[in-house]
Image (cartoon, rainbow, N blue to C red; front, side):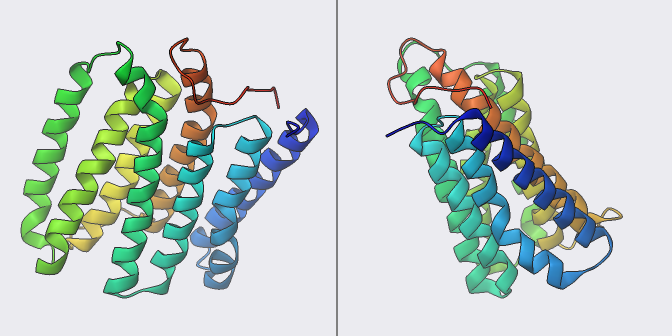
Length: 225
């Protein structure tokens, strides 16, 4: 299979950036129809850019799982929310699969794992009383998987570290809404802004980080965009 050329990557990147700006502007201006129209296109556009750069399949799968989660969360209701959370959980598993080669080839867990474990435990303890009974266990389990992904991303360098941390922040903002905590001004805007930044940073940083490891065997060649 031929690797797409640099022009394809640039066009895909520009398409994603334009969609992201349009979507965030629609949130700021409370244009719900524009939000609905653009949200399902965000992760496919980012995946197209990643594919043009020779990204490994696990990364593309993670982004498309994010697309499924994005769509399901827009439906509303408990069941679609849980299914959407499952979609994002599958994406985190794909990221962990992508990061796993480094962990299995001599890259031992670092102090960040202990820090992230404490962050997870504290946040679950604080959120637990405000969550509906049916959401407590799923939110705790999902957040543990998300936190594991963020901790693993930390070990791949500053770009992926920031991406993992922002993903954790974005979903924490969602969780505080579920627990009826006071919301920040522009709550929905900040959820999506941090989420889009997180996915972008992971898509940009993870392939280069794992491909630079001689032990890694799963990354496709990276080509400049």
